[in-house]
Image 1 (tube, rainbow, N blue to C red):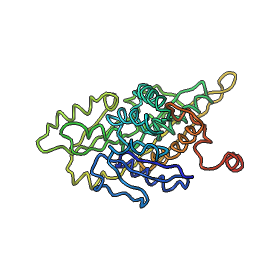
Image 2 (tube, rainbow, N blue to C red; image 1 turned 60 degrees about the vertical axis):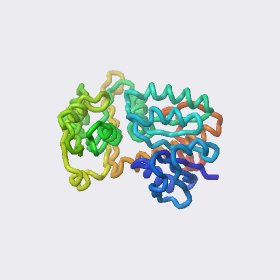
Image 3 (tube, one colour; image 1 turned 90 degrees about the vertical axis):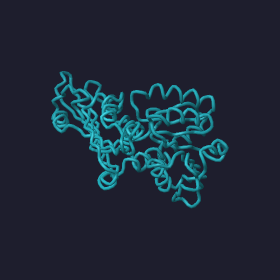
Image 4 (cartoon, rainbow, N blue to C red; image 1 turned 90 degrees about the horizontal axis):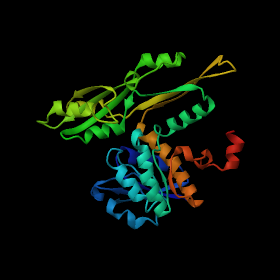
Length: 328
């Protein structure tokens, strides 16, 4: 029997989830929920229907997992705890500093509703988090380094778009090459947040908007820009459509460490991603963890989970026997 999937929110991430479900034969998209007029939302899956978000709870017995595709700034802190009362849910909450409080709120709601909630699923947090954990466990004496980009951060772009006077925005995260080279060479540099990355923001402002105020709000935004050297460019809608419609991203997780009785041997563990479409790759990770949420729920588990809590076997459509035969 197929895992019945619902999508809440049909933006870049929601469309990516629809594609990911198509590529997983054990899944079936049943419904897309939107805050817009459902008649104005055109999806690609012939067998699924679009409903207004107010209809979602009425369908709690018709879906196995609800994937929540809102933004981390204001949507997910409200939506994920709310819908975890009624569904097994997965979100991609990516404000690292607020994950503990988000976990606590979602865990309480999911346990009350007897559901499984997977939060902060994607590539960072997500795949990068796993690789940081593995590398730390393997090389306990070492240093961690994470570099993002160059690429568009959906969460940061969304946060800027919500500012007063902003029509559209794209935020690029750019690793500082000198810092990356120093880490790879085994120098083990002490790097501040500011020394590892810069941020570049392209903004389409409303006519007559206070651009100086917008720029100041961006550069001082806690958890997003305040610890980085940030450059803000104001551009036209035409330039945004021409030059900034793609959503590439990627990055590197690197851990350097030593082994041997006298720490005489050096090691570098590096995991990297180069993504042509950030939302589509994020959605592919989410689909795998939706499968895990479904299986954990079937086992009777409840509460909030992160990627740290899920054994790899729960992610794959293959059986444990197939995995042992072909992937070990």
